[in-house]
Length: 448
Image (cartoon, rainbow, N blue to C red; front, side):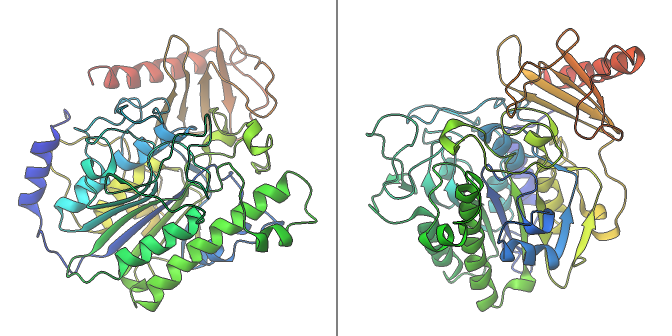
């Protein structure tokens, strides 16, 4: 099927749903930033305090083999919010954090577009990093309400862009620059979410809460810095920020509970990719366990992320799924669970995980593809079953050159989950098979 225009898809959607379907569930998608593969207690970390996300897992389904759409911020968000490969939607790399630069094409269908057309009130709260022009900022991409920063990262108290220069303020509400000097941005996000939740309406709501933490700068609160004071550096700085994040998520979940909306609200949680090893985050602090790599590489530590879905009274509780899932799957999964038909002709690369969640059925993914960066030598990876082939790989933990064969690294994840041994020479037939598979993915994307 070919990709339809945004207008035609939304027209088809509006004809297929009740625009004021008040009986449909509410939806919150919580997307944390730079949170490592195992950086929750329910994922095996013993030195973190994360009772709220652990509690979400107890009230829902936790995935242990879940993959981000990409290992960098903008591309991962583009893949999640459209349900399509980041390369297919034109965002294989990070989008500029400078005003006036476009990002995710305005013609792409976002979750905001989809749920708005299905009769939902829609809100973006937090980080955007998908475009900094009116048509590519949240209000131009299907969100009735938007509050947060448009670039990649901010100081949480001054709300200025964190990377370069002191003069790029970045805090917006519905396209208008606002100032909240000295106020802690995670607290501002909680307040904004509460305000949106308590507005009177007969419509269900969809909230994309793109939390900008525990991304650097690591600005945990005094309470959590004290709790982690005896934890070794830099885990103490990172861990205290993870707990600061978990606490704010708990505050929003508590608001939903107080409003008696818990059983009427689907909550999805995922990290956008693995933990950072950049200088700005003290060269680490996150935990990928045996998984190789971290943010900005396509080894498992860059792609494998914590992911949970909860809808008490409607889906299983306290269960774990080992099947492969991806961030691109949330869009079709939520459409399926909310019983909103996808207009015929619209292509997703993600698949609905509803049967996996409800019935513990097989993964809908026999294979998947990742492509990160532009130029002549982008990083890419393709997986089929337990086999994974990486092209032009980097290891952002060791930062040492990877032992490749013609730029390729072949691994059997079942026998080598730490991706230590390149089998490209030992398994030439498998290498050719995986190269052909990658070619088929590129051929399907090229016309776009």
